[in-house]
Length: 272
Ligand SMILES: [Zn+2]
Image (cartoon, rainbow, N blue to C red; front, side, top):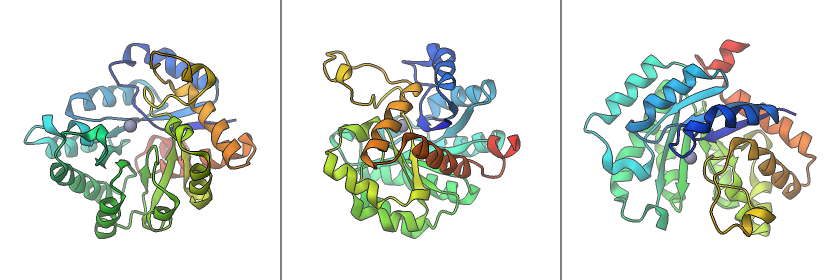
């Protein structure tokens, strides 16, 4: 069974020292690739290095909405340069967040940072990983005006409802489910799953965050870090929710992710 972690952050300072072991442990359970998403100018170099060090790592560069306050005046130019020097890279993580998680982060500023990155992904014809919480109206409006996105827009840790899926899919969206999905009400989760077209479903860990719910973790007073081998728990949960065999779901989502990350210049295309 082959798996592809469509979104994670192995450059995160909480896990970077353990990255070789985490990657080895995930490879051992069948994970062939990791889309490692940068979040700010501070970690783009690290993501680039990981992409050079590990054949399995797909580097992704983007400015995450939570970190926009620290951006330099020339951040967008710096971002462009990263794509010039790293043609294997995809775009991400970028996004919009109106939830309490983004309390204190100016929303109009988020829009100012989000749009040019989405336009850059479109211009470079690369997939882009998008974080969207409580902002699907604005996301749709911007995607309508900038899109469509034949190279794909990954709605990572997808937490929207079934209603927004069809139009997003038509514009080029993929729906990537992480451990967060295991905390969503079962009925809503099943409905959402039913609405997602088969060829647009992905699995991810969002490691080191988004630890999937389990009997052990729910009784654990200390939040535990999530690692990419836990994609198996996400697979099992989503398979159960969609009444699919986990082997079939693995094959489906693996094929979708490989197709999505086989853009011109990508490692996957080179490897073929
Ligand atoms: Zn993320």
